[in-house]
Image 1 (cartoon, helix red, strand yellow):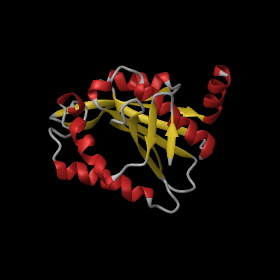
Image 2 (cartoon, rainbow, N blue to C red):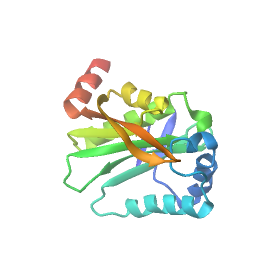
Image 3 (cartoon, one colour):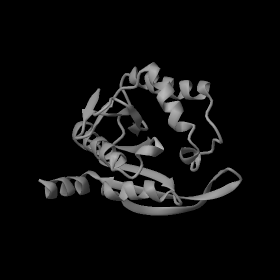
Image 4 (cartoon, rainbow, N blue to C red):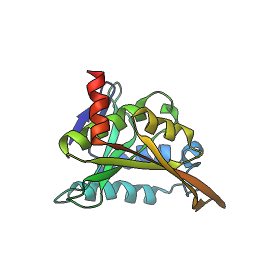
Amino acid sequence: MEITTPRLLLREFKASDWSAVHAYQSDPRYLQYYPWNDRKPGEVKAFVHMFLDQQQQKPRTKFQLAAILKTNHQLIGTCGLRLDSPDSQQADIGYELAPPYWGKGYATEAANAMLDYGFRTLRLHRIWSWCIADNHRSSRVLEKIGMRLEGRLRENEYFKEHYWDTLVYAILASEWQSQTDGEA
């Protein structure tokens, strides 16, 4: 599976991708909103192997793709959709990028492509996501792709000796269709 955008190639993960993932997942800026304090090579290899296993599912319910810059073929992150079951009409979307690529529109570009895949190809009714409330970059991406804030869960995540609020966002197929019709 491959999806192209103006600046990115979203493609299936390969086992060799683990080192590029490890490089950005080891960055302290990346780790700020995750429970880990560091990422060991074995943990990242298992993380990438999980995506390889998901590619083999029949029927497939997890579509996590590597985000590759077209200009230099550098892996800069991941973006994907995850259905709870094969007959589910909704999925959650998630993404992560290497910190040097934050604030350049890549996450928005990748997430928009995955929304398109979810609504056009998978015929989903609803796509949702959540993020740590303090992670303003992530909430901004969700808003840019047309998701609506559905709620704030107070102190429902605990890591790094701190309780964190999370924000829940979603977009319905009809909202996405209206949004894309307006762009045409």
